[in-house]
Length: 393
Image 1 (cartoon, rainbow, N blue to C red):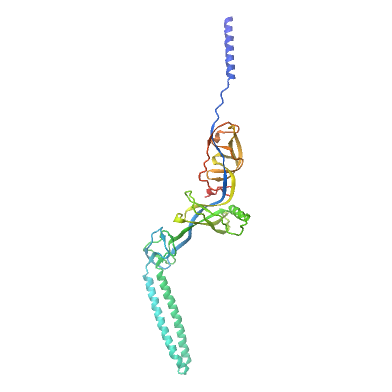
Image 2 (tube, helix red, strand yellow):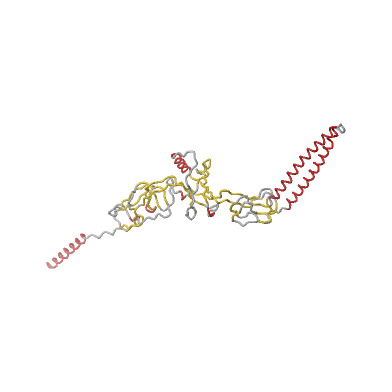
């Protein structure tokens, strides 16, 4: 019995010793999470006024039928350049030829009546001087002559009008440009009751873009001009035209028109800029972005947009310190520039920010950083009010 009790005590002591050793041995800490880290970009960033616009020709000409008749021929290839004076359409001239012949006949008749009235006046003039005929007869002949002269002038005008109308049966290009599609085809009756639209011609050697900008951007622009002593003068800032594929037209443009009023319904103002268009690359009706640099922000800090987290209007960036420990900083973001975000405050040059794995980190956490490079890509311009103008619809 005594031997059995001793065995129980030994087993109990051994178990307690094993439990104590297990408690003293701690589990190894988890390895630091891997995150991708990049050094912030620092460069001078131009501040732009930018808007979405639609292109149009420097001149948009409506070609219309000026006389009534059946269309006979279409004499141009749609969508091709045309020259001033080039034949575009022919309208059946026969009714107008008949009208012209009738007007010429009426003119010949009035000219004959005028010749007879002049003969009467010439014959009566010496007779009235000799009191051989009543003066009233002579004065009547004079009145008939004047009436015949007026009738001849009216007949001439009618014949000239008929000649002009006959000329309108050959529809010519009023100027050089790019002709659009035809709106009518042979056999169509045109010009009845109204001047039928036949086609459009656009002059696109210089392409124009009409666009609107918000009132506050206009005010920003106007105040910048006033601060530079340019108040009352036309803006001279060079404009850029960004096409739908992201390419920029090589030649800079200039502002040619600012509307007189701000649209009270949209709070925007209409503007128009003109750009050289060599090779006629840009066509009317295209959507494009126009922009002009109105200021420069030197030494701006840029980070990828995915590095910035937002909650209830508060923006934060995870910064990795020298000992690879995370610090979460509150930042003030500026405008978006392509895939990047300009940071007005909260970061400085040389800071390393987490660009991938932000959801894994927390303040004070040690991480395993993998350095990557921020790709600027095709950076869009920054708007003066801190918004991405390129995102406007």
